[in-house]
Image (cartoon, rainbow, N blue to C red):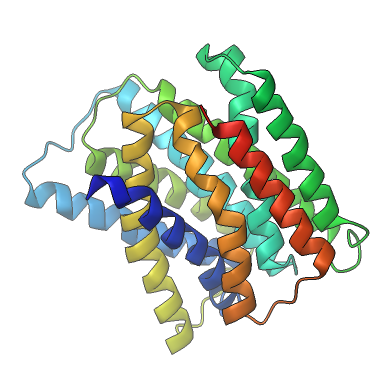
Length: 282
């Protein structure tokens, strides 16, 4: 069963980009994420209680998990949701944040003391070349600049979060760690809507279905798988599974959201996928 975790993760993670669009069509992105992670934190709390797992942790473990949640559920998902709400195409948002394995490999050397080979740097070059081809001359027209900036912030956040998660000193049970990470995400988005935006959610059938998908299949499913894989493997090896996400997300966006892709876009996706694959192979 564990051997198919990466495949399950890719499918669930890619599908999250697709259900983001119907969510932000019925809410502001930060209110939606605050609602999502309130439910997720309660869910992991109840699950831990059911398994009779101690919820009390020391200050260091709490801060580590909470900060990881702020990075991952706050800056990363907040950036993705906000960028799509501003008109960033779903497939391109997925492509940009999936450059994460390349940045992780580049930073794992100085931070995690993992050796970065020439082959990995070639992958870095190919990955960014593909991304430039996809972005092309569309920045500022079909691709909003503010959306692009938000997606880049999301990319940096998920990269730092992955490295941070690998450096954690805690051996907390996954349900407890995930609960405090979800709490960090909830508090982050709650502060955003208190000080910066007017919260709005239309609990339509579309919103409920899309949000249920993200809560149960993505937050409870895909994210738990990711944390498990990070805990069991090196940071660079774990993120190798992300090389399948851009093309999978692009296909889903074409199939479900009717997003069009040019031949140059398809070439860029292919080059980026190859680059990420090369950069993350042993």
